[in-house]
Image (tube, helix red, strand yellow):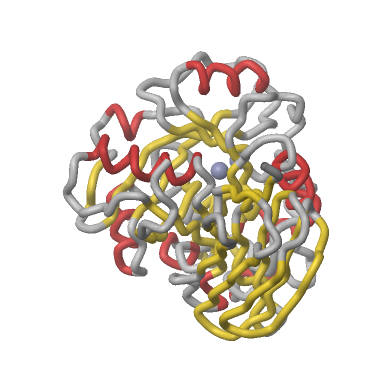
Length: 354
Ligand SMILES: [Zn+2]
Ligand SMILES: [Zn+2]
């Protein structure tokens, strides 16, 4: 770990998306170009059950956008979707979730549990795909906000048309029980929270098949749930791909991550840190408690900031540069609301006794 008063370099991207290598409609290069158009630095592609894009050499820089290729694994019942990264080849198919979670780690990769708490029943062709394998000790992350999943869970016969026309407006907040699980597991070990878009750029027939519309073009979804990373080294477009990936993976595994809904404003520049006479800690780091310990939160625009300790709301303030006192040990994170809309979710800072 580096000295925590050194600068971090922020990059922003989108995670969890499907291309023509599974059930998406765009090529990797089309997705990267959409990402470029809306100012992303990276995308993490996760086609279902295959790494063909990687085998075909499509993991690379596309201008200033780095496209990283992982894949989404599921079990024989199409449950327990798992976003696996850092692998050079696919692991065995049709094995139980407990087993693939273990194997991904053993092969030197890491994995993120996708849309863990889906319960949707609005469209028969899109049943829920929840996570059931919670006993696994080997996963590294949880997708705490899945844009597509949220959109679909909220569908009713009455709002369907409105939601089709206003895809970004209907992205409201992460699922509360997922946040609770994430807080609970973090009291035992470090598990990163990321945001996913689950983009497919689906073609959908409306009005009895008369009109074909693309629901959620990639570009639209890339302007919703974004994952910001605080890197230890600067990424420069064109740099060695293995080196670039390592910098990104280190930030993810270290939980130097926050998630935003871009629809409510650009969250770049948001910071949450703990400080005292002994030192300081940013998101993902830890600090030893003393009487001078406090939290500093910098938000790009005035907003309501909630401080969460071990899953419980402990303080709330409105402003742009906010300070909270810290008197207890535990895992802390913040949630930021702008005009009552969920905007930013940080990962945890750990405050410990010596
Ligand atoms: Zn999935
Ligand atoms: Zn997916």
